[in-house]
Length: 535
Image (tube, rainbow, N blue to C red; front, side):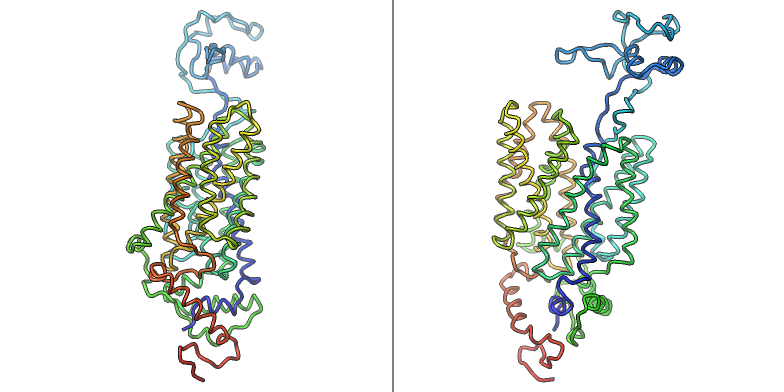
């Protein structure tokens, strides 16, 4: 029996075809950054004050500035010992009886009673217009297992494009929540489908590289986001710019194939053979007749279900630990990014600097995981992130640069952990349930995205650094749990649940395949049976 890994040896493990597909799919990672952490800019609360239609009319007639009308509309209030213009109160006054004219703007309103805003708010539109509140639904569809990687990718991006535009044109807060909910259903599904597809069509020695680089383009998106937000100050137009790529990705229908591994798991051998032959042709390689005996090395089932993830002891352990690590990575990663918005600095510069920190994380992963393995760097990244959060919380603000450096180390650690949980997740589930496993576990990532702002904003009211203590505790526990996972360095992707429960069999099978590699040469007339026989 010939498996897809055998044929991949002939077709090319990372040839021209895989490189083309990889380059196309990497583009998917960049706009996801805008969806995932764009709330830092889209949810920015601009300076605002009560609207008074009578004053607005006079301002327009007289050519007053916003500052002039604001001074007449709102009172001064004591905020932490400092007099500031109120954002929630206005003078209760009949402007028709004040004698206010275009030439007499100065009025003594200090003894005038005040009331809560009655007609909404005014904003400084020259500064920022972003005031949308993001609700992350965090529901990732597991349709990849039913419809395949390619179709799931396309369906997700179609939903992203439609929902993203609807978010941009939402007329009110309620419709905004509804459209963002739809947005949440598809945005990560397309990213996950692309990740699984590219890791399934390359050789085992290339999986970690393409996986890390695929995620590195998310970091590129992180760098581009503050630049876009700086020049596109209207949150609606920023939303459109973030959404347009998802519409363009629909053209990938003509440029990317379905995963042959998935087709084999669905007993669609003819299609799998055709796609593999096309890959070999583009790679300028020749396949042997062994492709005629290509079979799925999956003895479980072509239909995956959630029960497959918890049916056996090791599958349960993997599912629990990976889910918790997805949750922790999301809480700490997103929490540290959103924290930039409450520290009072230049959010654009701070965001840009924090984005640059992500690139060393990717290089550290590439340098360590084939030399040391997956487990130790994964655990260490979580522990470093946790320690940095704890230390940062107790560094005085007077030591600004030292505090910034330690915080950046924490950001590097959690970025490394976040990137590693993705490809470790794919390596710890068999083919037929791999995408479902990633989808289910990564759903906890979205739960973390919901929890992070609550932890940050609620706890920061008690003590600004308290969220860091929580983040550090979560990361420490995540690092300890990772040490309970098996090492997957150099191990072929598992095909069955038995490969997970009995990993020694996988090693034996890999050794047997290495011994029989010469049988796959085009002019070799030896079969792959245990007892060699001449055909």
